[in-house]
Amino acid sequence: MPSQCVVVFADPGLCNESGRVKAGGCRVEQEMSQVRVEEIEAALAEVGEIKAARVVIGFDGAICEIHVLALPTKQPKQLVRDIESTLMARFNIPVDHKIISIALLGRDVLKADADPRSTVVRPRIISINASIAGVQAASSVTLEIDGSEFVGTASGPASKTGRARLVAEATLDAVSQYTDASVSFALEDVAIVPLGREKAAVSCIALVSSFGEQTFSGSALVRQNDNDSIVRATLDAINRRMGFLTTA
Image (spheres, rainbow, N blue to C red):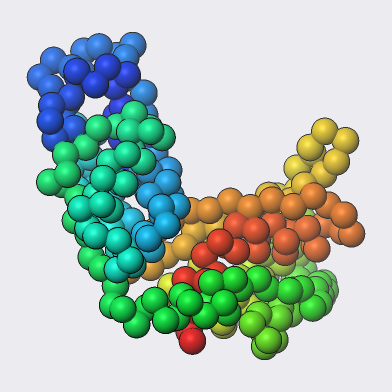
């Protein structure tokens, strides 16, 4: 599915009070740019109280709905203002507060967030194993997460690109054993790329949940070997979300 984009006009006068494009506004093409919906959702998710965000756009490319799941530590009116400010400051997108819907989590969530284990969770690499048998390859990655070990595995064709994907998929498999079953990970892509005089592993991971799909990227310089860097890049993409995905 192609990514949806929000039409952004440099001149706010081209939009009405609800943020929709005024009649005739689409003719001023030189004043128009586009922002991916995923970028807006990621920016909203960085607001302290917001756990998840979903943006819906209309046929005219304007935002028509914003749905937010947030902690009950701030009044909804203040959250709405934070959302409006974030969109204006980051993307120059004005929105009407009437299109913003906020659902507050229960107070029991605050107790979980107060526990350091649920807010600062960083997997530690225990071992990485990769093998080839004929035309097939297999990878296993062992991670220590919150005091427990999880072994992820993946297998498939032994192509060069395939072997790199298997290491990343085994990493995600290990993390998935720790996280809530209501979410799942999908490997979009992983590669080793030149970076000046160095090499770096770059990964792109999709997090799929009942709120929709969010895509994150991660990177790591190649220090020990390619496989180690692929695991670190994959973890770098999802580390910021680990505290929100626990089963405990």
